[in-house]
Image (cartoon, rainbow, N blue to C red; front, side, top):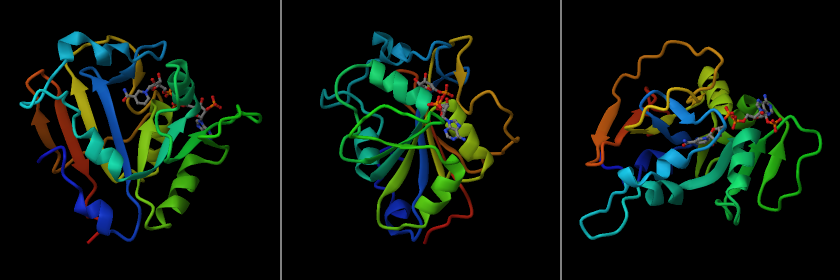
Length: 203
Ligand SMILES: NC(=O)c1ccc[n+]([C@@H]2O[C@H](COP(=O)([O-])OP(=O)(O)OC[C@H]3O[C@@H](n4cnc5c(N)ncnc54)[C@H](OP(=O)(O)O)[C@@H]3O)[C@@H](O)[C@H]2O)c1
């Protein structure tokens, strides 16, 4: 399966898809213990396509179908630490937080609500594109346990971090057989795993 599939399921459905799209280390971590993701930019992983352009792992096609982004407060603070503009300007950007007085950010809606409740409501508002579950681990775990993740695109990088923030956080998750998962290997050792929940919700 190509990573640049236009995803007809996502565009024809009556309910919005919640899509996890993330990169992890081979030992399952989203980030180092301090939250850093610098290892994703290691020159050892640099990869160009045949036309010389940088490999984007299907990101442009994925981003084009995204209407909303979801992240937890920890991920938001890491993103802010990168400096520069918020990376998803123009999307409906939601940050889950328990902070009573979140920062003032014109590009973001801070939501104190339970993420699962918010997602259930958002899914039933069709025609607004996919919902990108950006992460991090805590929010991923909450939405996995709630059974709300429709598709996972996980890019496994050939590095062992040894410790860090797990893909689904530190709270237990149920054993889950990802039947029908498909994999695409890149020449730099990155492997893209895609799993779509079945039976599909969409025609
Ligand atoms: N490799 C990748 O592709 C990738 C992608 C995304 C993120 N990451 C990494 O993941 C790390 C962060 O993951 P994380 O697990 O530590 O944190 P997280 O899931 O990003 O955020 C956790 C935060 O979400 C808020 N939250 C949690 N439960 C909530 C609830 N029920 N209601 C409202 N808000 C709630 C709280 O925010 P407050 O603290 O504001 O109250 C909590 O501290 C970062 O280091 C980031 O770099 C990596």
